[in-house]
Amino acid sequence: MTEPSQKLVEEVLADARQKAERAQRRVAKEAAEVAQKLEAEGRQEAQAILAKAQASAKAARDQVLATVEIEVQRQRLHTLESQLQRIYDQVAAEAAKLDAGRVREALVRLALDGLPQFPPDLPVELALPESQHRTLGPQLVSDILAQAPQKLGRAIQLRLADRPASHSDGLVLRSADGRMEVVDSFAERLRRLWPDLRLQVAAILFPVEPQAKEK
Image 1 (spheres, rainbow, N blue to C red):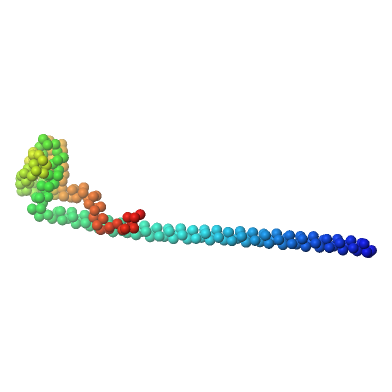
Image 2 (cartoon, helix red, strand yellow; image 1 turned 45 degrees about the horizontal axis):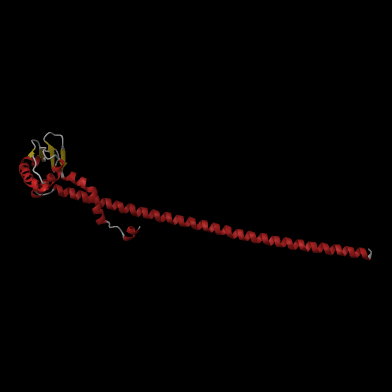
């Protein structure tokens, strides 16, 4: 090979080596960039997975805590209802055991509470349970008539009914024409008043906690 030819070959080889080296550096750079990109994406994906796992853990924890709170409230309400029912039964039992003097006083009060529901000029009859109708009835009518002007601000027309009441306690007020009737038994009065009374009793049994008020 002549010298010029040898020189040309060497120049071609040198140029090829330079191009190869440039290509190698370019590929290495691109590979490094791809690796960095993959690493960054991997970190982001890992962080996303971690955040998702943390959110799932928090949701599970919150769900458990909510379940516990619901169960606590359920047990609290069950206890409260049991206590309220016990008190209701106790009051009803005590009302059934009132002595004669307190029964008479209570019946007068029940009658004076019920009479304003009747028109002033309408004659009213009073009926008591069969065990009290004839024995207590006349005196009770007398007591009511005596207290009516002061308690009601007017006189009333009231007499003892010919037949006793079918209820076991309290009294019945009915118009002489039979069109109006007011049942005022102790049990019925307790039943009517209980919705308001139970709220007052519940507030005493289970006072509202300060943090609950703030919410």
